[in-house]
Image 1 (cartoon, rainbow, N blue to C red):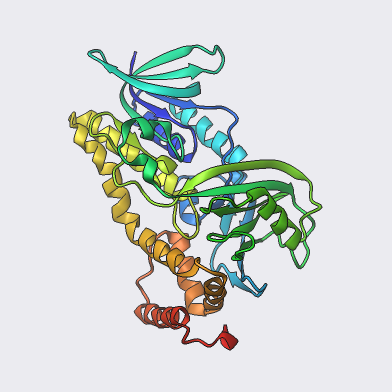
Image 2 (image 1 turned 135 degrees about the vertical axis):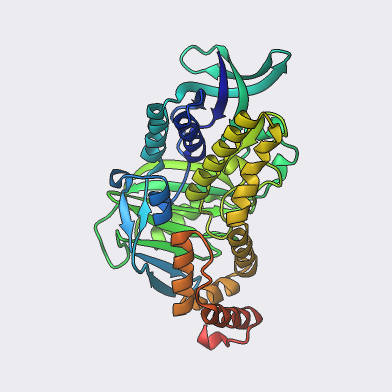
Length: 393
């Protein structure tokens, strides 16, 4: 059998692409390594829940407040007005998405991707089958590489894929403590402190009966486990039972090209679609999986292989401005603890809070209040240039 598509990787991007292609009546295989869980805070905005029809059963918590903590320990609580942020556990969420793809008609294969080979007969994906240990071949018209950061598919097929910047993320899933002033099961804590991460942040994200505690950094030489242990002590969580430990690289810039112009297209972390500054990836991965499926479907219908490029164009049309703004914010405020202190101070501003969460919830920059944008721009400039005295930070 020649499949219409083989999707390599069964995370949110791959499972979404496989499900959408299967619903379109295409013959698709979802190839995934069983048992791998990506380190992830698990936040999913209302737009993801709506656009991808996520049932309430997948939500481990509903977050109504975000707390930003500065290097000196000052904090600001930001209420999430008119809604909530859902929290999922990737251990269960990814399985749900893969099972849903299978119910839509995608075939499942369990094993490790090895390589892509081509001959006069066409394209083949070769993988090591987990049950048998044997090399197995899948003949296919197209390949969607959704196999995560440092994607093996991307390394083989896409020039420049290895040059993308990364943050190394590490977290520990712990048994959540009872609610206390320090730990609120309805609040996400984001810690901007160079002692925890010199260039990113740490987090405490509730997952119902559990919680994710972790950090990320792009700096070499940082001991992620020690930093997370320090964060747990500072947050009063050192004595909580540790249930899982997970680490992985997270890309922080979309690749300049997602396809090889012939038969391979990337999606999700493999394409670099994780938001700068926040490190948010689930929503963008699922969007990338959806536009990848649409591009492959277009190529199957038209016979034009250059239709694969439609995926990146569609994604960047909707999200490139948000990514640029978030990158600028990270570059401006994550350089030092003095800058992080000013960033948390800026978060006290009500206009900043409202526009930030409106943009997060809806995944687009809010343009309805130009005066608020102007005020934020002036305040941002004042903080960055030091016009706001330290006494007021």
